[in-house]
Image (cartoon, rainbow, N blue to C red; front, side, top):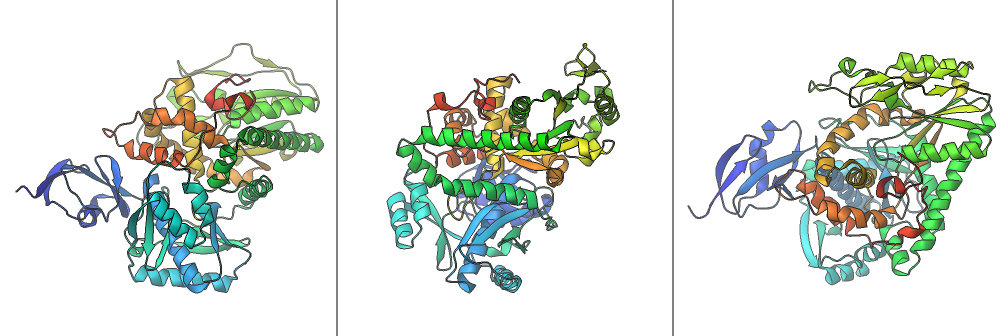
Length: 553
């Protein structure tokens, strides 16, 4: 009996005995029917464990499927490794790079080579063949300097630059037959798990389409993201100019004492881009309403305030309006599937009142604007009047700003739409991108702690619902924008690390969010910290999160 373990199955709240050393994958197959989509990993005492691991002590076991962001990330890594090896096999002299997230997939390119439709079909066929073969992904733990030597031998300079500043003494690499690579995070056990994917030709490269939290059991249709791709490419070109394409490059800049110059260059880039947007609005001559939308912690509030300043410089009289003030009264708020008020739904806004107010202002009428009282859940009027002139321009901020329902009653020539998001162009290395959602959750966690009295745990607990709301209410409309503003600052994670680490370390393994906290701690460990806070301007997007901003929020 001493070799039997007591394992509590969290989903069913029952304790089962298993022999010590049992492989988790076997137990996962036993309980797959209780999960809505494919199980790709496990949680043992709230810490992520790969399915290939064994159980050696008593504890609580749960499983991760594709309805969670952790599950989607693990699936993505398997898909990227599958594509990497398939490309090595059929295009041995070509170098594949993972670039960025695009729509429901990951955009990749080959260095100096544009594959044809036929060549991409061959890549997809080879990937399918490897899936059928059920080839295992084998993990090997190496001492850091042995790993660096291996990377050196194989010409992987990007990985050497990334890992040489990392404090951890060991590094996990994955083997796929005779091919190896380094992937930040956990992996599925074998190729047979990667059953759902597509390879779609886009621009000079291709998108690896995969399931996500809104479509865990079938492949989502890939919708072209022309404006989003351009926003990424614009930032990538700038990254090349300043010599910063990867986190290794950033760490070298910090180590060489050049962080202050980098901060100033990044902030000047933002100022230049905002100024350009203001000039475009001015040159149109007819715009009366600027709608600014974006996901949580994208910096849209600071952006709209900075844009207002630039419009003022151009001779306009900007007036800030928040869509939150157009909430319907609490008792009229639509209910979500869980029976709770759904404040993320566009039906939670009084679109009729918004249209009426805006059209009255466009026609020169004086309008009293509503103010929503979040404590009472009721709309109030406190004498906030707009007396429009020829120079009045309304800058409206809110998550639904790009939804066509917002503007269906307006003359299109009066409206200009801006999508704001933190599109992180810097990669960890050539094969590992930084998810934009990671930047935003770290921003949100710091802001929630500094200004809302929330712990990191509280932010992590609400994040899944925030993400589902974004997928439903924001991302489908991002291509409606006239322009995209990339609020990501290439230096910011090296600054945010100082604020986020102490918050994340407070999350312990008594909660399900422990695995998320651990993942973010490991992620931030790749960055050398920047402590030159004094050079960050008071108008910076980052000040919205870390404090000492010139603006009031």
